[in-house]
Image (cartoon, rainbow, N blue to C red; front, side, top):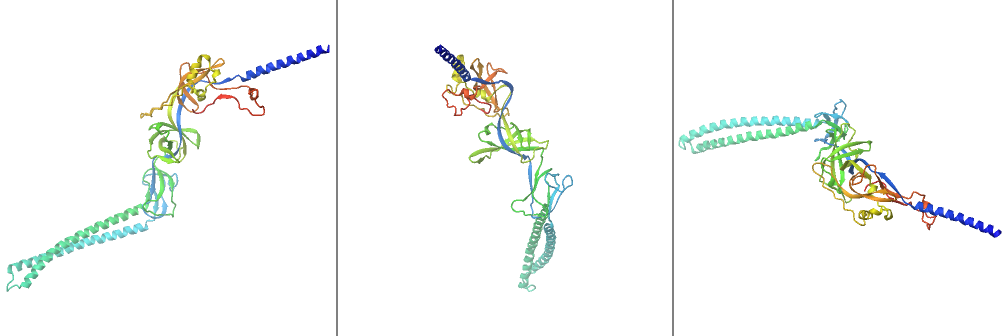
Length: 458
């Protein structure tokens, strides 16, 4: 009797253990099955861009300097009647500053006196010439009488020679007098040039605005002495028109081939993080800069600043549009990177998946077309593969990938429709402990079993 009860208990325990083991084994196998993570194909616009950093600049900037040395006496007034300062609006010809004119006014007065003296010298030379002409006429008459008499008892030889000499001397003095007049006139011209220079220097003591504009920088104060040497010292920095701005952008040599004149550009500035500004490429400068073996080119981007929000020297985060796909089917970039494990590929698609796998057929290198001179958007396409769920398996769809914004890529291909779920990765839905291999050490942390990836650039 006791043996029968003991056998019955052993059988019950064995059945319980067998049942529990079966359930554990089935749950373990179920936990090991892979499920796919999917995302829907959407329709929208995709814009591919090149990012860079630039600095906002005024389009026309004029550095107003001083051509003479001296002490700043006073500032002029702006359009509001206030002394010129930072951000003052001024008109062309408006007085910006005045330099002490005393020394230059003295130079003008000295030059005027010298000019009067030089002109008097001309008058004296003219009078001297008339006197010389009178003496010449007297000598000419005396010589004429002497020639008639000749050396004789009535005219001694010595007197004859004296009349001849006086005549020749008087004739030569006429040329001397004419030369003296010419010299005096040249002296007048020289003094007039010096006076004009002195007067011009006197006008330079008044610094005026060459254009209508806004003062960006005022670099002097009243009482400060400016010294003009080989290079004129800068006193004011004027922006001709702050309604139009430029952004100077340093573009890497690897990307400069995709930049062209007229290319649309969008950018943001840190001071207005929620606002996007628009512009167009104006020109690409040819004077490349090299910093730490990195070659960059400066690209000028013109933009409208009618709102006045953009200020000079702001840092701009630029995005050059290189390719655009409008109203296109888009998939996450992860869908183009994903490749399922071989056992999860649909049996009917084994050959297609082998052809799509990079090991079987290396992906063709990306080919880029040169940027058109007409300003049209640059396009680039390449073959790709996305996978869709087919029962317990994944089935490939061959597509042509176009523009990518770093998160999504425009694609088109046979069988691809809006709303279709494409695989972006696979995962083990059970807890990590259930997914751990049977012989794994329970005290060693295990990485979650995932395949595929999320968004991001290609």
